[in-house]
Image 1 (cartoon, rainbow, N blue to C red):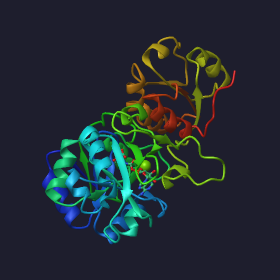
Image 2 (image 1 turned 135 degrees about the vertical axis):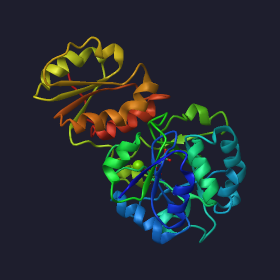
Image 3 (image 1 turned 180 degrees about the horizontal axis):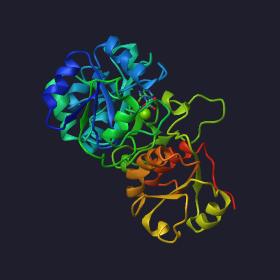
Image 4 (image 1 turned 90 degrees about the horizontal axis):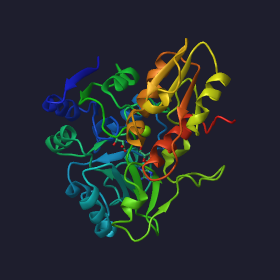
Amino acid sequence: ETEILKNTEISKAVEFLADGKLVAFPTETVYGLGADATRPDVVKDVYAAKGRPSDNPLIVHVSSPEMVWEYADLTYKPMAEKLMSKFWPGPLTIIMPIQPGSLSKEVTGGLSTAAFRMPNNSTTLNLIKTFGKPIVGPSANTSGKPSPTLAKHVYHDLKGKISAILDDGPTKLGVESTVIDLSTDIPTVLRPGMITVEDLLQVLDNVNSDHHKVAAGEIPKAPGMKYKHYAPSAQVIIVDDTNDFTKAIAEYKTNKLGIMATEDVLSTIPDAEGQLKFSLGNDIYGASKELFAGLRGLDGQNVEYILAQGFPEADHGEAYRNRLNKSAGQKHFEK
Ligand code: TXA
Ligand code: MG
C-alpha cells in the first residue's frame, strides 16, 4: 500500500526513509522518487520501482550547499559556489567529480561524477534536513513516461511499489531542472530547463550546450538523454504554426483526438465531437507547467493522436521544446 502524506507529515516520511523505504517528494520542477542516497541496497529499489536502466545515474538532492562537499571533489568548488549562491535553492543540477568511494555506483551509474541539486521546495528541504542525509531522486514516473507534476501522477505509476508520496500540490515549473556539467573544459548544459544559458552566463564566462547536437549513433553525455522519454501511448504531433491547427485537425480526424494549446489558440478552434481540448495556459510558462499533465490527461482518455502546440526552441522555450520533441519522437505536422 502506498500512503499519501500531507506536506506537514515530514516525520512520517523521514521514518520511511530511515527504514530504507521509498518516498516520493515534491520539488518546484516535478515530483522525485526519494531514497537514502548513502545506501546502495535502497538505491537499487529506486531503479526497480521505475523500471530504469541501471547505467542512468541519479540526482543527489541536498538541503544545503555544505552537504555537497561531503561527496564532491573540491576542484570545482569556486565555480559551483557561484552557481549555488545565484541559483540554489532552484532548478539547477550541477555535475562534478566526486571524492572516490563517497557515493555508490548505484547512485553514479559507475561514473566518476555525480549530479547535485538543492530543490526550491520548503517541504522537501525540511525533509532532507530532518533526515540529515542526501536523498536520491529521479523523477517519480515509470521510466519512459511523462514526469509527474501532481501526486496523483506518481500514484498512477508507482502505487504499491513505494511506501509514500508527500503531496504538496501541483509543481510550479513542470519541467525538470537544467543539468550543467562542470567537469568538462567548458561547462556544458546536458539538459535544458528553466534556468537558461543566458542565466548561466551571468555567473560563468562560457557555456556550451550539448543536448541538441547528439549525432545518430553517438552517446549523449547525460545517460538519461538516450532513452525513449516522455512518451504517452498516443502519437504526439507538434503543430509549429498555430494557424495550422484547423488543417491538422482535419488531417488527424479520428474518434478521439486530443488538442493541447494555449487559451487564445483553443478559443479559435470550434468544439467538435470526439475532440478533447487541454489548455496550456497563456504563455510558455503555463505551457511548461502543464505539458506533462496534458500528455497524461489526454492519454488517460485514450485519444489516438495529440496535436500539441510547438513553441520556438529558445530561452525559456528550450525545455518545453526539448521534452515535447521527445514525446513526439520529433513528429511535426507538415502542411
Ligand atoms: O528537476 C529534476 O531534476 C527532477 C527533480 C525530481 O529533482 N529530477 C530528475 O531526475 O529529472 P532524472 O533522474 O529523471 O534526470 C536526471 C538526469 C538524467 O538525464 C541523468 O542521466 C543525468 O541527469 N545525470 C545524472 N547524473 C549524471 C552524471 N553524473 N553525469 C551525466 N548525467 C547525469
Ligand atoms: Mg526523469
